[in-house]
Length: 289
Picture 1 (cartoon, rainbow, N blue to C red):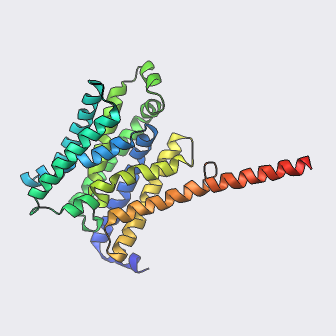
Picture 2: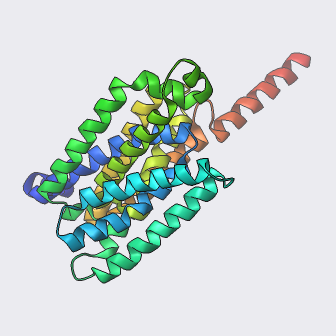
Picture 3: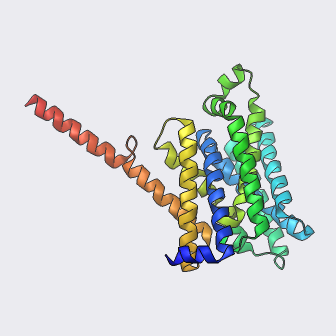
């Protein structure tokens, strides 16, 4: 009740709630395609690789959005260039590029320490979100959702089978880099909420939870968005109540929901499966007796 009263009173808490819910939704939406395409490492890479762009933006005195998007896109193209033009495999390319960008980002952030707080960038602090950050998140979220709705069919086909998508005449490389661009936008929007290090948890965990509950992509996207939003709200609540960094609390909330689905999912839950197997064995035993 105290949290709801404070929510009605303080504008910073209202901005934090709106921002965190939108971040949870768009992370769940894009995360569904990342999980289906087996690109969790790519999500991790881009989330870390935006750090130098943020540092350079702070140094130049411009909005961090521009630098973060630029380095995120450069990372996606850099990984593609190495893996497509050498014998080095995709996972190794991701490791090379993301570690280099992240290291560069740490050095630049240290140099620009007077202008920004490294801890806040790494772990997020949704309670310090500004009005401009909230509007930036809402605009990015609207763009991401609009693109997914308009091109859902193309994203669906290419996510399940790229060879079949190419046979249908779809430009799979363009779709791949479009998802990378959307992933970069979502990462930038999530910086205030969960930070650079933990954004991958909000991208992957709610989508994986939804994956345990349904076989249909459209339902998976909706469920992942719902779980992402719920995790963000729970994280905001405990972050405000106990004065903790929002990123780790949101990540733990998403993990707790995943564990519930892992144990009790009607089709995939291990406890439900064991109960079903035991009931089946008992039925067979009774029938044979």
